[in-house]
Image 1: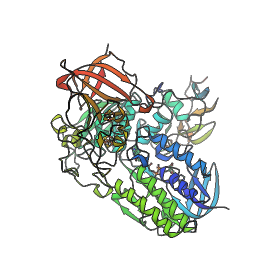
Image 2: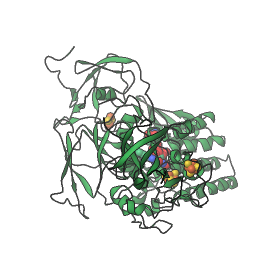
Image 3: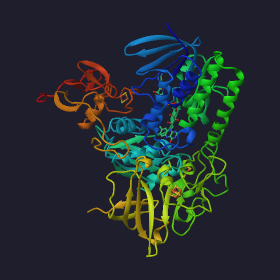
Length: 527
Length: 110
Ligand SMILES: Cc1cc2nc3c(=O)[nH]c(=O)nc-3n(C[C@H](O)[C@H](O)[C@H](O)COP(=O)(O)OP(=O)(O)OC[C@H]3O[C@@H](n4cnc5c(N)ncnc54)[C@H](O)[C@@H]3O)c2cc1C
Ligand code: SF4
Ligand code: SF4
Ligand code: FES
């Protein structure tokens, strides 16, 4: 039986971070992952991530995965792919299925970083070909380069539903609606807004009545539900679709920990069955740790920190570092983690109705109910200010753990204050040089550069644009509102694509001056 | 379903060699080493199998080898998860009916 000082199950952000930390301390580490590619959730994610610089924010998910892997490689971590761990015992024996064979390994310590699996809901027709999971949609379009469908209805408005909807639009698919049984959008407002401004309607307090089709999906009917989730008669709406995509939550994949005899609990704030762990991820079985989504559904950023914590703990457990060194490092990680776990989407606030931001500003109700901030709500947020000449307008209105905008600006125009979850604002003495870095760096695509009055009755609006075909200078079309409705005529003034923008093109459009604060997307006129 | 020729973030996808395979006797084309399910999807095939008891159609659901909805008979071997099995030149892929492959309909075939 092959022996390792640390066996890590799962090569996602938490597993790889744990491996890197442990290997840095000199431990012999192996990582098993069932997939053909390492990176866990990351390698399917093509959007720029939230968080701060230390958490690889504004880098696209799949790139973060590649960076972590390189680092692990350089430190001599052994990563074994296509290897499914099927057994874990309290004496830290690990059974791994590779091909048709079961291999046995023994670890001095084990870190479980298996992440989460997708939940499902059932409705008439849910087994028809064409009903798929959100992860499946990502796998098809982002890994294998094929459209999951032509016309798609998304069930679920959490971050996964919102992010995948945007990715479907990027893949050239049509998203006919985002539907959620809850009365409020579950994910970040900025993710919702970037989908809404493309014209995708949100149906909150709605659910699928039935999927239609004999051999495959040909349509879907949704209906409204009341506070007790009972359907309201006469509210049915039909859509012609070929695909229904489910993004109805994730559950920790904690089976291995249960198998090893770790104490478990059912904790809805953590997403389901999770191991009972101390603040550094140690389970009730000495030497077995859990890190990342498996011990509570969160984010890649927190998963990486939890992984590092576990890595440092096993190093001390095996005597590679002293207790003092461990505690000093853990303290830093803890502070990091705590700063991420603030704001309205923090685990401790899950299920709570938050009505005001930390700054005491009323949250946009339209954003929660329809996916976009209404024209009469936007002015109350600190990122939205007025000035002569080109200046940034930051439509980021909820407390989320994110701050690339602050780091991006060479003129230090933007700040998120002392706390990563505070709302970004434009500093009063800001001298914007119209470089566009903030627009391109914003993970939420929530920053616009606006010249409200060009002196000739027009205004210009610069927006992030990540679709093909790319409009060209001189193209004529329409300015779309935050809701995605045509509100005015618009002409493309310029389209900038430079390497530093990392595939986010900056489209500047000219609109009538009255629409400077209303037009937020461009749609080319059909010829 | 359509392959994405060029993606705004990922660019053009590198594909393997184009290969031929058969689906229920019908000659189709796909790219070597992509999952069988993707090649089928690109050819518009949605139904991978019929359930044993109720004869209900099933297709790709999870696309990562977990749900078994996509299993088919590949080169005579039933219950192959086509979403995680690489396509090879000349593969014989058949719709799975219960555990047995669906009988080839008359007039079909190469
Ligand atoms: C659509 C979407 C968008 C997201 N956007 C963001 C974002 O913008 N910012 C952010 O911070 N986070 C984001 N996240 C969340 C983030 O991806 C996850 O929180 C993070 O990946 C969790 O990391 P992990 O290492 O715990 O698990 P995972 O990334 O899930 O990795 C676990 C790995 O373990 C493998 N595994 C599981 N069981 C076994 C076994 N028995 N044997 C072998 N291998 C096994 C899995 O296959 C997987 O590869 C997003 C998630 C999704 C789905
Ligand atoms: S455009 Fe450049 S200078 Fe102006 S706010 Fe954005 S990053 Fe700063
Ligand atoms: S404005 Fe700043 S804090 Fe808000 S999503 Fe964009 S980068 Fe993050
Ligand atoms: S689609 Fe789920 S196993 Fe293939």
